Amino acid sequence: MSLYEIAFAGQVVPGAALEQVKENLGRLFQADAQRIALLFSGRRIVIKSNLDAAGAEKYRATMERAGALAIVQPLQVEEVEMAPPPPAPAPVAAPIPSAAAAPVKSGSSARVIPRDEYMAAFSDVEAPDFGIAPVGADLQDAKPEAQPPQVDFSQFSLAPAGSDMGQAKTAPSGPPPDTSHLKLQE
Image 1 (cartoon, rainbow, N blue to C red):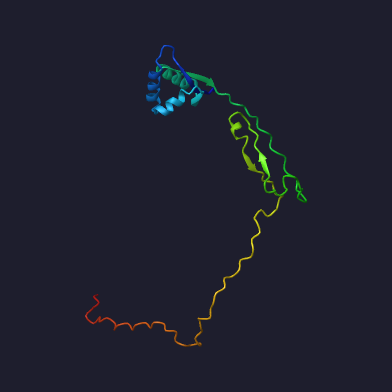
Image 2: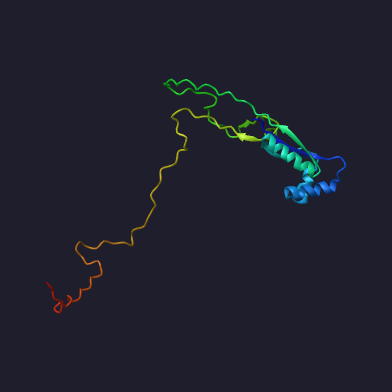
């Protein structure tokens, strides 16, 4: 199934008044004047993407009725072939040192290579170059052993064994209730 995208580059239907088209698009998209001015900046702006043929035609016709010439383009979807699963890893006797496993020096960074024109904006981003530690390496920084707090116990003393520590005595319970007026019936 083919997918399409609808774009607009500021072109109007021949004979349509520019202000009327702007007003129509403002109502159609429920947008303010600033957003409509952005549509008429001359740049190609994608309005909707991933549409089937019927949906793309509906958008194109609606925008044409409003006085705007929409650009309908098929999306180019790359078919990706899946790689075969990797073979089972053989047991490793000792970690193999490599450049990637080397500790990161402060100030070193990786360079981002753009994969397409949209990612080209990120080509000048400087990101830290994190290496890969060998298998079994401890990744957490060493922390010093926790020291117990220094507490002054000089104001405390111990009472001799068996002494009264001032616990509250339990109040004696009241007399048992009078049940002489109760009788059992057979």
